[in-house]
Image (cartoon, rainbow, N blue to C red; front, side, top):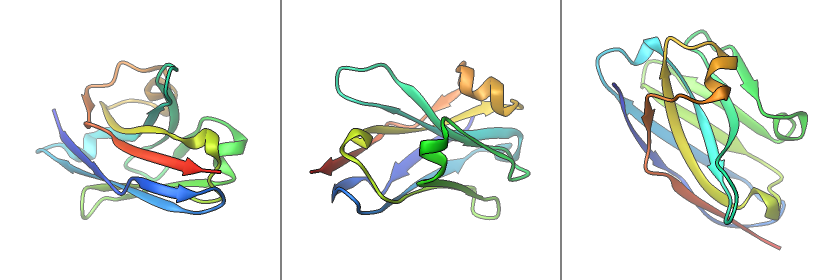
Length: 125
């Protein structure tokens, strides 16, 4: 399995931007599809975006794709989520995740092998 450590969360005003990072470690990071889930207060955890080693990516919805960008730096084994035009409804704990040799659709369905501890994102009105 890979180990995941997130950073970059915080408090931001609506309309602002944040970049989340996720550092991955392990012998076979390249074999994992990686991505982000989030869990808002009182809600279930939901898929946000995922990316394969090749750079192929998937987003949960067009409304997310228009504002968020998932990037993977393979040389650094680091995953990023650039979040722009943030809305109050984006407030959540964001979790980095990895799934071994998974298609993007499979990753979205869950069954993740590794989770980070999460980083809090709070968007104020």
